[in-house]
Image 1 (tube, rainbow, N blue to C red):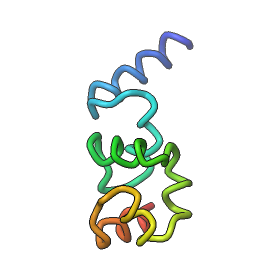
Image 2 (cartoon, helix red, strand yellow; image 1 turned 180 degrees about the horizontal axis):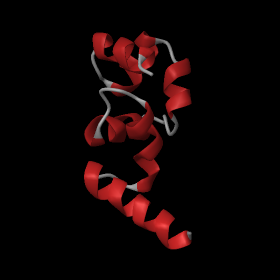
Image 3 (cartoon, one colour; image 1 turned 135 degrees about the vertical axis):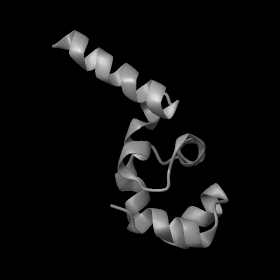
Image 4 (cartoon, rainbow, N blue to C red; image 1 turned 90 degrees about the vertical axis):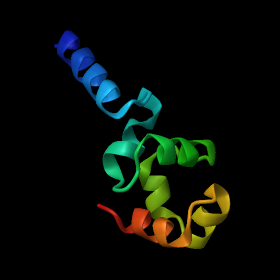
Length: 77
């Protein structure tokens, strides 16, 4: 089972080109891939739930992402 988990982790890392630390952001937020996930992570958002709780204008100020994009990311499923 451990080998299967490691294999799946590697598959996801290769597919998205990301480190494990960005998994939650990339897999749970729409319109967020490697670059945007890294921007969010560097701004202190390590989990998708943290992003979803944030106000769009605060997310915009902390990350520099556009306000429309921030709204879209926060509302994503």
